[in-house]
Length: 115
Figure 1 (cartoon, rainbow, N blue to C red):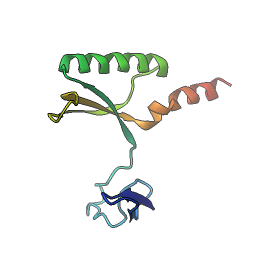
Figure 2: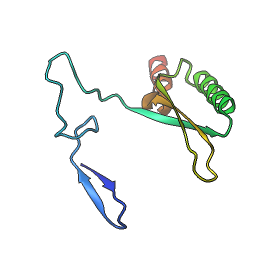
Figure 3: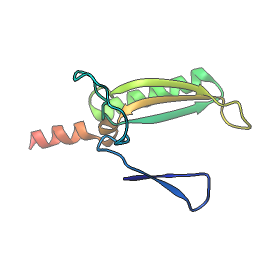
Figure 4: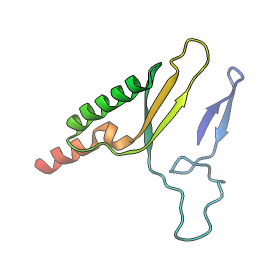
């Protein structure tokens, strides 16, 4: 069970979610070979008025994170959007990264194997 905040102050909507974080009432694919995946990915965001700068920062972060992790970061998608409102940075680059990688799970596994 999860809650989603609404626009009304002090009000929430209860959501009945399964272990993958999707609604228990979501229609599932009918064919046995099809499925809704429960793979957790977390967006890592880079915002800037200059797209090459945002992309360079994302690449630099990927390099540093890969060195820390000791293996390539599992990135499933790169999402590019823009925000043309007010004083917000115009470009919004998001890397959808595996949550376990960001938590350092590969490091912990290697350390556990070494003991």
